[in-house]
Image (tube, rainbow, N blue to C red):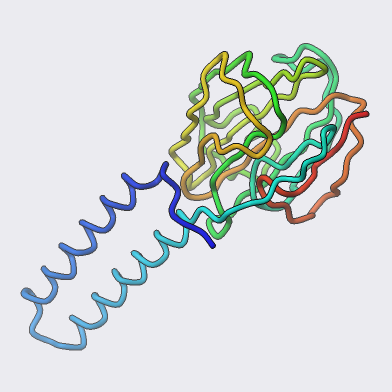
Length: 218
């Protein structure tokens, strides 16, 4: 069972209005019934895709204390060691998740904890799955602290995605699997985990936000 993501209701409304007006215009402007039918089908399909894109299915988050949960739906496109991350100021493990336009795009908190850092960074719009997107693309960076360790999460805009939504503020308390925003129309999410994290995923694995265990820390 799923509903529609609240973060996309404004976009859905705008697209519905535009598509409706285009269909009405085509019905009055064109005489050929086949052209009218074709235009109507195109815009109806676009509405259906928009509703599909902004779907927000229910998720059951594992109740495992030391588990780090996937913040996004998609495919693991990169796993690498990070030396002296500029935000966490220590070494870690980067796990990157590529979200295609067909994935659910609602993002969720990877751990229980407090938001101790948040920063929006303007940038470029390289294809999200390439490595340089992590540093050069527009993004929002958030650091979660659960009192034992810190985890950094980046919402990264891609070639198509141009709108990052993040409702968190510094001082916000979050629960593992809690919704925190989304990236509209194709994107990527990076996690920087402590170096002692034990990974539970590998390259090209498909993960689900709020459900898949990315790693654990004893």
